Length: 549
Ligand code: FAD
Image (tube, rainbow, N blue to C red; front, side):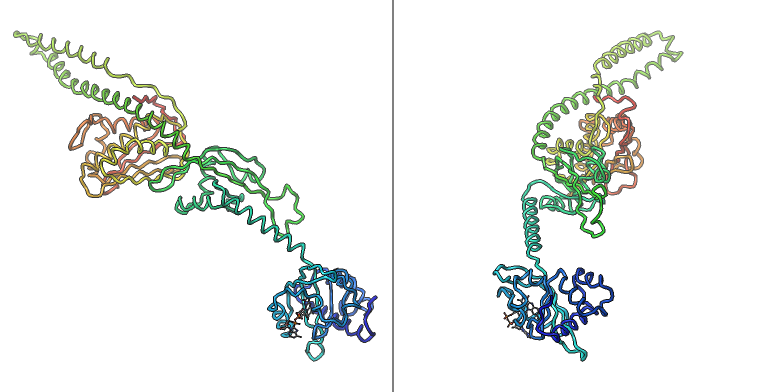
């Protein structure tokens, strides 16, 4: 089968190939080694059998002298190049050159093999019919008994298709990436272990807006709070979801942002060799998260809502002021009336000859009537339904409602919401009222302090199953002696009471208690006042039957 010029040449080729195979260089195609292994010991194969093996190896093999003059080619070489061995034996390997491989590549090849090193690389070759192909080539020097280079052994295969596939893949990848980056929505591919495999420009922009907080975490947490979404189980077998609206609160004074989220389960292409025979059901999956920002439309709706809210809160405020004024009048009248009642009960007054007793009784009767009229005039509180509320959202609304006051006072508002807060059951109006009292108090406190730098800080966070809201101001603070007294009805500690009847903190506490929560003044806070509101996520939302008025 071998068409070598002579038996000597045949022997030389066997020697060349034997010494090459005695220690095949790293990178020798596995198919070649396997073919020889099938015949047993590589070193002791009979020459004929040995040549047959090389001859039938599925990779193009050629043996050259030290000047790259071809001495032998195998059958795969003939099939790949289209040249018969008679046509190439005696010619330089450059017969395959397309003249389009850069000269530096050849220089690199020759430098390596002359240093007795194996060279691996890619050349652009031409077949006999002129068709170009990409040759992945391994050239290995074969040494004689004196350690000098005697031959070169080359193995090459056509990787044109592979290269085309790679190029196509890389083009598809850049196309996908370009399309993803151009898309206005946030896109991220997330593994079951919450690792982001792929993202786009919109995702990266969000990373900046949220000061480095990983957006995937923000979305996953928000979805978990909102729909009980569990990434691991969705990746294992679950179904995706569509159009779930989530709210994310950026740090600082930036406005909240809303995203309509959809998630699709995608099979992860595991490239590891160990995964080659894995069944589809054993394959891992990822979540493709697509989040479309709907902040502007949501803001328009919210603005309209806020206007309605402003009107209804003004009405509520009026009713509340009236309630406070009447309650204060009842409270204040009660004291002299109690004195009159006590006086009438005294024995001396019973024998009164000058009509004092009569006058007191008359006063008492008309006062009681006045009290009845005052009680009747008290506006009745409105019962409010429990609903699912988001504390960040309520606080943000209250801040927006107080914008004018804040601006007029030249105050800096530091808004530090938890990026994601779980929703809770509560009475929206009552809670809104609670925070309005606290923020109004903070504004009044800072205004009284007359400091150059005036600041209010609003902070929300989750502590176990409680939502904690801190309203801090750098005003004069509340002295320890009256820290509890400020919650008493009609207690007013302001230097200028103005319209305050001293019911704000009483009502705030009532609302918090109605939600199984609490309001307290942080005793450790220095440099102003810090009011801590604690509301349980799973509170009954008004076990005491609180009614907002
Ligand atoms: P050349 O002048 O032959 O070579 C270009 C540069 O290579 C020179 O400037 C010089 O730097 C270096 N060079 C060439 N010959 C030598 C030498 N004898 N000693 C030191 N440096 C030298 N080429 C292919 O295009 N396709 C192949 O499939 C291919 N297979 C090869 C297999 C083997 C075993 C060997 C040893 C070489 C192979 N070559 C192959 C390289 C080939 O021999 C030529 O060097 C190459 O094709 C460039 O030929 P050229 O006539 O354009 O320029």
